[in-house]
Length: 273
Image 1 (cartoon, rainbow, N blue to C red):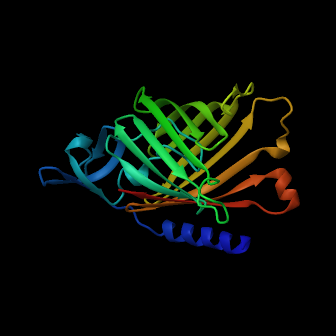
Image 2: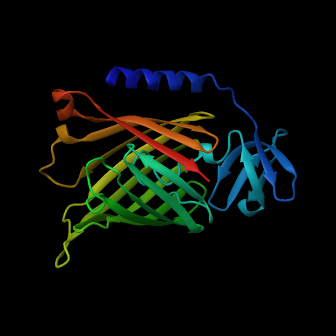
């Protein structure tokens, strides 16, 4: 199974590498179309470099559609594989996700710079009451074209509630970004509310390598002197984007686990409305 997974990754990477650069077609609400390359984007605007070298900034509210090399396929988005970035979404944006096959969810931005999420598990053998249910939210602000910060939280809705509050900082543009996150876990059993003494640090990065493929990597570790390097998880992954579909395929590498067996394969699917 592991060899098949690696062959699929290599094959997908080869196919994406063969894809030639394409112009982006931006259709406006008045029916006209503009062609060029997207060089910058925010939750409310995109900047398009025209073929004559000039650039133009467009409000997302004036855009009807974006095709080929679109802003969607060139933005990191609210998450890497699992690490939250400081990116949010434009108002009215929504997408479906399916993480590891058994964890479907939905994300929606009611207004600019604020998103809501919800999901549940569909693990075979568990009753409806035993399935994991969760909600999440994140609000962010773009300090400049290359700097963004966000605050967020997620928590489960089961009999024993748990989750995490976090803050994230992202530096970069649509072609490459780095993200740092700090969070504190919490739990609530109905009577007592507990917050972790040790913060969790998350570090990650993303690099666009072609029109339809990007490379990302992330890791997490607690600020705890008892934490051992052998338990550090490192998750390299590839992101493939075609139209409204996105596939994230990667592996989780943990040194101690590698000594016992092989990396854990990861697969996330996304469909944008």
